[in-house]
Length: 139
Image 1: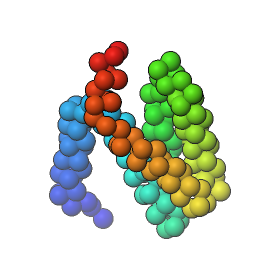
Image 2: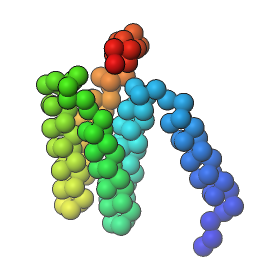
Image 3: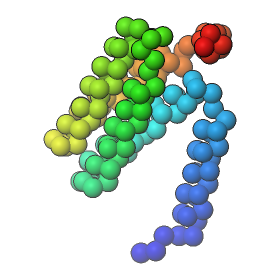
């Protein structure tokens, strides 16, 4: 069955919209976008898992693992100290858990990672703008 002509246009719009958001985002917003991207892929993979769409589930979970790996790479161990180290370990745990969820086909593990990532995201967006700006200007 052929895709509608609107599907290609919607995909192009979504891609351009996402790229535009990245170009205009500050570092704080980019982290939020990464977290949102990982959460979206985990949620979609959960649906694939329930529908027994194995290949798409694996693709989405591998992408979520890559995004969380990027979050880990963004950590500044010098400026973040123990908090950055703890977050790094938590991101590593999330990646291992997602890989295990993929292999075991376990929704519960996806839910655990989503919960942890949402907790971090919620704390991240609560950082006052003044603190974000002072951290940037201190560099």
